[in-house]
Length: 134
Image 1 (cartoon, rainbow, N blue to C red):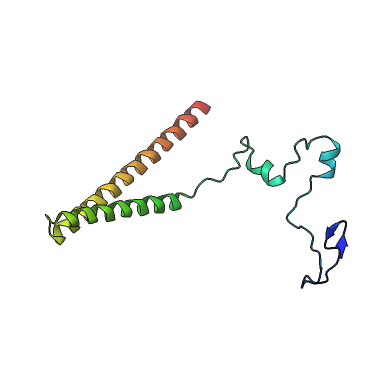
Image 2 (image 1 turned 180 degrees about the vertical axis):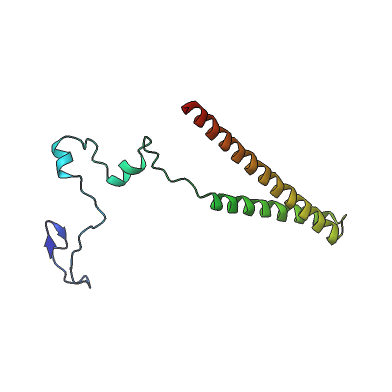
């Protein structure tokens, strides 16, 4: 059972029905583009779409996901810090908890300040552009 040279010459002994499926993921180049010579490298639509820097087609990373990843990294660092402090046996559990919470709050406050500064810069740039247009 073969179709256009694809498939087995005989399905006997293969424990299959010999049914041949088409490749539905293949995207053929446009016939008009091929006639006009606009498909020199025959790349797929997917490649042309994601490699086009002029249209800024790359997706921007979601800010919530970035913040979540930052918090996860912070918690990993805090866990390592906790383990180091517990191994030293110099501090009590309450003192270790206090240091960990203080470090967590310091980092969160730092991120909050950075975000406020970033938003303030964006607003300043918008105002400048608005003034330049006038």
